Length: 165
Image (tube, rainbow, N blue to C red; front, side, top):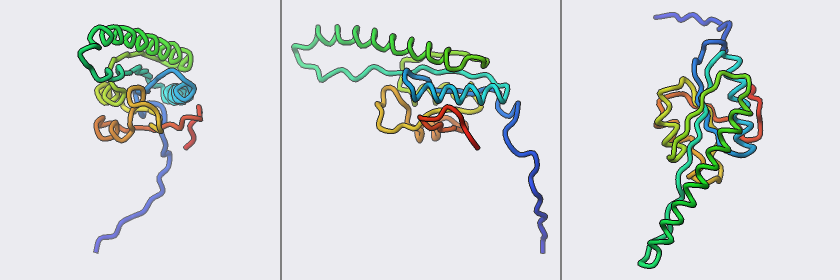
């Protein structure tokens, strides 16, 4: 019969150096600001680099018919301009909310879940928000990111800018 020894773990917890790089999804809005603040605090505490990701996809084009060719072309131009403004606002908010941390910014024109999954190899931990009932083109589904990223995912609550263990 094999005996096992039980021991009390001491010094457990996440400290400096536990994660070298964090990846956080940033978008315009208060929920994202809280998430980025929490990720920046975590990055500063762990002396880690924080990569902010701005990702958004174009909304699907309305169903075409023979009369929408020209209008659809104009719609794409307007949608691209709106997407660029949204991503610029996300970057500005990220820069503001992550002040004091070692930061980097990346922008992708893709669905956020795809972008986080693709960029996951650059990070040791992904920080994202819950999906809730927000739009797919602007938010990521945590389940998709967990299954596709191959990295641990921390889902930060939308209304808190400080994480507690």
